[in-house]
Image (cartoon, rainbow, N blue to C red):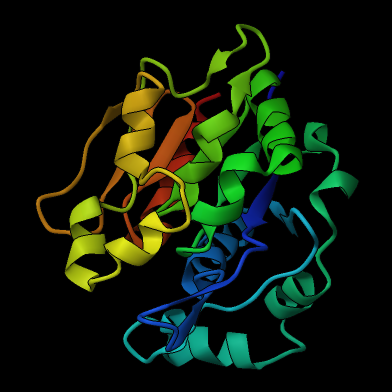
Length: 239
């Protein structure tokens, strides 16, 4: 039986400052908006949710290099369907994971803070996985895998699988590794190694790159959010 043609996009509830306290990190807008557009265009009903039902927009994600044109117009229009769903999203505890065929973890650096212990978001993802659906994540979104277990085996769902995610090289290039270390959680590649997954990446830190390993779909960075969602849809169509 094919899982429901519905997708749920998880949003980080966390926020923090980076760049010596100058800028705020939260949800990276395009990493939620691009999959939202892909899924709706493919005929999916799409919901958004976060652990607490709240969000903070990431400063960097609102800069012209990352948010412009139609995307910027959608973000600025508080009456757009995307903004209405984001601004009024339910807490993850209010979401029934059995209703969805795709789980997609959007991110932003702040996801490193709350995703590893976001038990209700992880419960939704686990239900989607157990019901034969697609679990996907982009950029720092794979932080959700830290305590995400396959209900059938009680093992990490990424164990023995290949994933990608934001590179440690990119964190170093941005000059924020010391600040990220103060949060006390692993980078994506470190988490993958601890859980028995293979981490792979594109040669360039900003290249559009995603990996499909069965029902697990992951993307490397903001530029990969759209292609990761498209790959998730393609994987869903093969179920």
